[in-house]
Length: 483
Ligand code: NAP
Image (cartoon, rainbow, N blue to C red; front, side, top):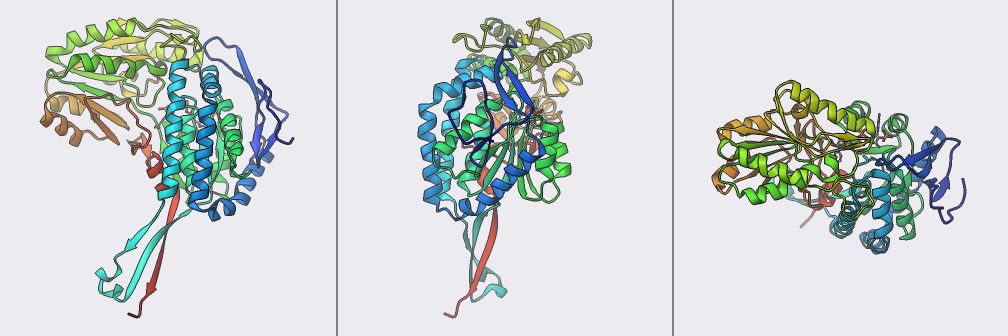
């Protein structure tokens, strides 16, 4: 343990109760594109986890008693600091997650939005009047419900948007008067540590945001089962999400999990738009986006043209180092993940799919791949690919396309391209997902919208207003009135 000092470029201790903590187990974080060491962090031991929850419990009354204005002011000061530190955050995201720098910059802009919307929600946070005398037993009574913070929230986040997905948990939690223990992905802990430091600099009480780093299994189980933790908010794989849910007992649990996002392209669609949006929708962050375009269903008359135009554009995407300003496609998070994606492509081909372009691999980088005629049961369609690959199948009728989209264990977002409003709304009503987009890609997320899935894609919604609903509990206050 040491007091907070200027952190060196390469070594990032945990931040617990406003103090730096190291353990005897350093971990080297590497840039996935070339395996170069990026930073050193420390694996938390049980004593660090206990300290982190204790610090968050001690600070919970401080956050709870703050006025809405005070909480909003801290978030707005954090916003101003993030604005000043944009470049540091973008380079850190690119360095540790391997995301192209230009996408890392976009992520920082989005995190600024998330923070700003959370500050606005801190101001707006309110319950409402309950119309008691609508029932005979309520006559002569007035009531309201208020929203109170839960207390300590454990936030567990993935590697693919290390800043904005952390922000989607931390800033609404603080806006609502909670405290947080944050466990970032092992691949991307530095962004989280820089973010916690930024909040401290913005005047957040020490102990309101604590970051513990290290392997997810032991840390996750500890936080999920700790009686002092009132809620677990998790973004990551369905496998881990299900484990968390099964161990969380009576705690609140929000799960933002995966998807194998589908797009329907009708024959009457504006194909220029569909191609222009679907290509980045499939290959941004090398397809490591939970709503990445993975399954495309193009209507028979335009299938061939769509495949041709899509694959031409996909094969022109520049591949390079994450810090190369021109790179659009970089590496996956590990070489093992790249091998898995390539093996799924091979399996789909063995089962009858046709490879149109891409699919080659160098270390952790996979060339953007396009396939057609993918069998629905091939893992490339049936599961979440989480890599730079899209399959483009054909359909004859809209009902057939809707059934194909729904033939998935997941249900996060889906979309349709069509000029026919009847078709658009027929699909919007019948596709079973948390969000449906018309003339857009399912990969669209605007940070204030309600966002979350059905089926294996999770439970609960994010977006600051909706996350705050999950992160507060309702208390009814009723009083008898004599007049
Ligand atoms: P992951 O392997 O599930 O890891 C997510 C987080 O959980 C990491 O911090 C991980 O720590 C931690 N963890 C691992 N085992 C745990 C356990 N037993 N208990 C508690 N936490 C545990 O996911 P990922 O590979 O980082 O991210 C990819 C997945 O996230 C994809 O499925 C993607 O679709 C999903 N995702 C969903 C959304 C959404 O909003 N719906 C957004 C982005 C990503 P370690 O890193 O130390 O293992």
